[in-house]
Length: 148
Ligand code: RB5
Image 1 (cartoon, rainbow, N blue to C red):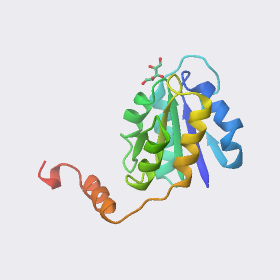
Image 2 (cartoon, rainbow, N blue to C red):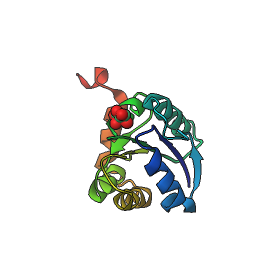
Image 3 (cartoon, rainbow, N blue to C red):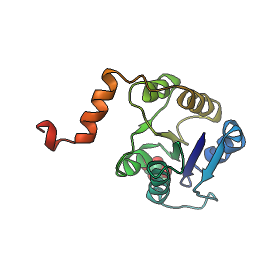
């Protein structure tokens, strides 16, 4: 399993900790940032999102201060289903019910231990399909074709 990862300055230290910890067992594509110097999160969100929809990685992990900016930015890449998770239950459901392909984390919100448990839950949970798949099809159709 190949994981694309990216962070801004506020997510840099958590990205490094995950790479050296739980992600050491996975093949990773690190799209930066490569230092704690201030930068802009959309660059990393778009790079990781495009790596996932382009098939270069199976899943993406994006980290900013809250995870909110990354989730907003990467959701603009067609084909991305991003989930901002602050606990293990959300991470499991993001995969089981939403078939999320990007996990967003807040480097200023959670610690390394919880982040590792969230990543583990996200990467080890499968999509349940069934009626959840129908909802993903509705998402792909967009509001115009759903009467919205
Ligand atoms: C950077 O200060 C911070 O705004 C950014 O990392 C992120 O939390 C935005 O959503």
